[in-house]
Image (cartoon, rainbow, N blue to C red; front, side, top):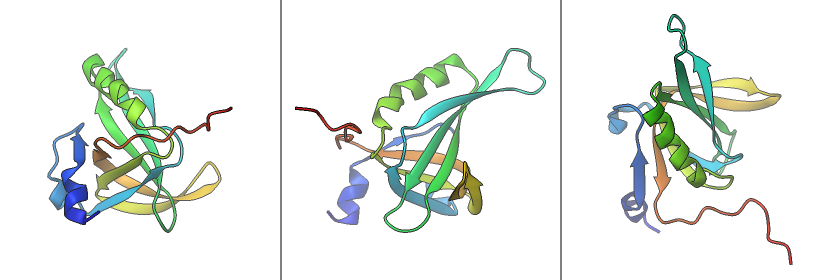
Length: 136
């Protein structure tokens, strides 16, 4: 598949306004584990929480990338992210833009952290592999 054909098949899922072509880095790889949503309390705002999407992706070569995408504070933003989770299973091909990379340890493994991750791209129409082989 040519790079142009691949780019035409990508569907963009945006959580914050960006100019993707101005991003300092863009990383692509397969998810090592299913994506998950984590919430954190907003400092100074009682009862309000921020939602973050956590991704760990492995490129064709090199260290894996850890990215956290800010989803927002409203229930509607959280619901939209929940709807995208079935596409973000182990083995799914994704691409994320960010400002920079840094080396860090993540639960005992070396990873490259994507700072200010944004502009998540999920291939459209590609079946997401079943992480468990069917028995029988």
